[in-house]
Length: 244
Ligand code: IPE
Ligand code: IPE
Ligand code: MG
Image (cartoon, rainbow, N blue to C red; front, side, top):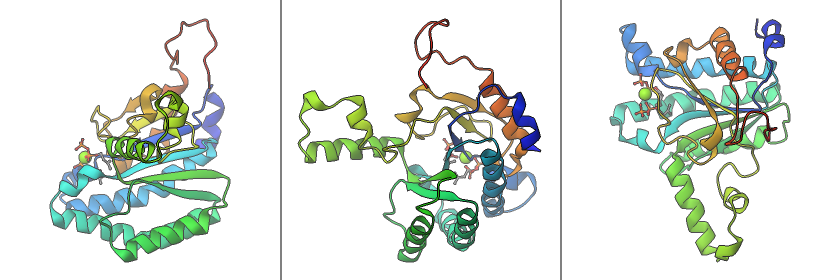
C-alpha cells in the first residue's frame, strides 16, 4: 500500500497537478462509449486522492475540463457535465469527511444554474478543511486565466512599475497557492494542453501511457519516485541550494 512505500521517497511534492487524460481511449479499448470512460475516470479521483494524502501531498490540482473541451461534440460535453452533476454531492460529502478542502479554478460561465449551485455548495461545505486542498480545474484555460488577470490589473490601474511576478500571481485563480512541483499526465501525450501555463514554469513533468481510469496507487508511486530522483535546479548550478 502507498503508506508502506513512502519511506523510499527522498522528496515528496507539496503540490501536484494531474492532467487526467485518456478516458475516451480507455473506453474505446473496451468497446464502450466514451462517456463510460469519463464515468470510470471520475470514479478514479477518490482512489488517487486518498493515496496522495497518504504521502502527505498537500495540494492536488486536477484538470477536469478545459476551455477547449467545449469544442467537442455536444453529446459528449453534455454527458460530461451530467456525470459531474450526478457525482458532485456524493464526492463533496466524502471529501468533507476526509478533511479535504475543495476549490475551483476556471469559470462557471456557460454552466447550468443547478451545476453552479452544486459547485458552490461543495466549496462552502469544505471551505474550512485543512488536511488537503483539492483544486479542480474545470472550464479552465491557462491563457484565459492570464488574460483575465491582465484585464483586472488594467481595470484596477495597477502602476506598471508595481507589477512584479508576485503581484501578477495574486490575480491568478491560484492566488495564495504555491506553484505545482510535479505535473503528471496520463494517456501518453507530452503536452500541457493549456494547463497551469504560468504556474508550471518550473514544475517537473511526468507522462505515462496509462489511461486515467487505470492510474492507480502503484502508478502514483512510480510518478513520485521519478520526481524524487529529479534534480531541480531552477536555473542555478548543482551545488547551490534550491528554493522550495
Ligand atoms: C480526458 O480524457 C478527459 C477530458 C478531456 C474531459 P479524454 O476524453 O481526452 O480521453 P482521450 O484523450 O480521448 O482518450
Ligand atoms: C486535456 O486533455 C484536458 C483535460 C484532461 C481536462 P485533452 O484531451 O483535452 O487535450 P488534447 O486535446 O489532447 O491536447
Ligand atoms: Mg484527451
